[in-house]
Length: 132
Image (tube, rainbow, N blue to C red; front, side, top):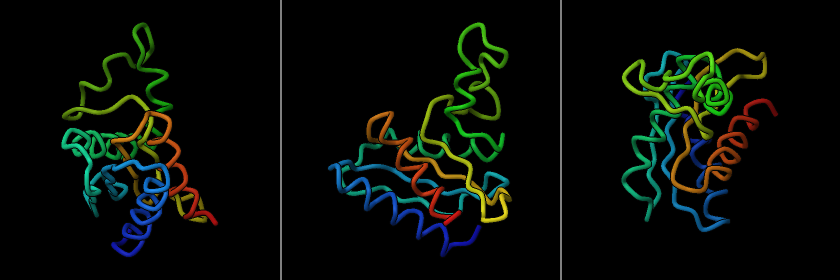
């Protein structure tokens, strides 16, 4: 993951968010869950700052999208209470693993501040741009 890629992903999300009048927070982390870039769109609430970071962190640490982990982290699930580990994680959509054209994990993206579905859609759109 490098800063140029990170900024291009942020621009993809910002463009998509603007189409639907959303103001979101976007976090890009490397494969080791270290921050590479962050953006908070004008008008975005403050709470999604931390949420976007935790979504990206979750995806990087487990090399799994936060939505997929969330399905297993429900009460009675095999990883219930996972979000209480590693300093706090997120077990719902919007945290997506970033893979290059060779399917190598290069980092993660976390999007927060829109609807649940829109956060996930925007993160997936940005991730897909790396494989095109």
